[in-house]
Length: 359
Ligand code: FES
Image 1 (cartoon, protein in one colour):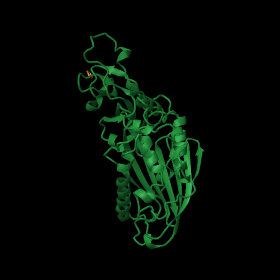
Image 2 (tube, helix red, strand yellow):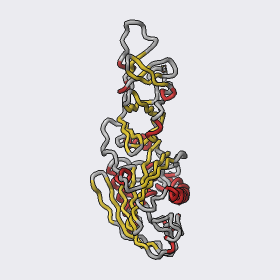
Image 3 (spheres, protein in one colour):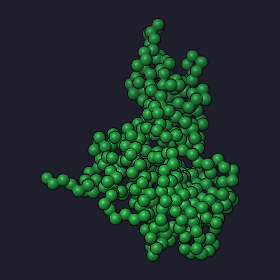
Image 4 (cartoon, protein in one colour):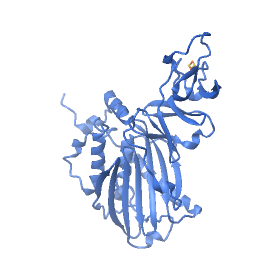
């Protein structure tokens, strides 16, 4: 049988090895898994990251992350409760009462014969876990390759920020989700009349470079009258005539993107942190920050427009195949334009990190 064209082969889905390669390479980075406020009631919280169940819990004020699977008969620990064992808090399994303390150490086995020590085989591994920007972040490997991402506007009192955590998962890989957010050449086609104009699909020149763990993209565009401007909540802004916008996109590799849009109105930031629930499912955590039109009653206008744009993007991003990003060389012979440069450079870096070599 002749070899399948790579595009036709993509319909068959990735091989088990490709999925495992994706999971193991992505395990070497920080990923957000839930909002920090989810842990405020003192109850354990179960999440899924890269196909693995993880339980998060506060024990004596310390944030702990470990497998959400009991060592004994594999019940789900996040169904359990926080108890005190020997003066310290621990997470008790709902099935037979084994309890696990900070570091994943098993600190109590109720059925253990008196005088017998708890075997070290009963312990669970602990994962790296941090709270940052109102989210809980987990790294499944012992040493993250890059630090947690920065978000200066969120902590600047001159900005007003809105959070949006989408309950519905996006049926795509987190790498595809980042690429879909970084790509601006689709604006005239997917967001015509809002962010782009099909009569003027020519992309501006993009400058792309790396700094530390970030891929930075910068370009200027003149927005014609009739389209919404950065000052989306001002109904007159769309009629105001040409507006020069400067976009600077910061991608904290591999899964967090901060889109900074500067205009005469001020600065508008769209921040997206993706969580690879698995190779084909992505949870999205959004934050929108602005330093103009600060009135709380304007919030809904910003959120409504953002929701409208996301719903336009979703079916297209979910339709992309292969699920996992193909090797960079497959793009090399295509007639790509200057607007594709950011995605090409992102894909190149993803491949260097060992993430994009599988299909
Ligand atoms: Fe957890 Fe038995 S399954 S204590």
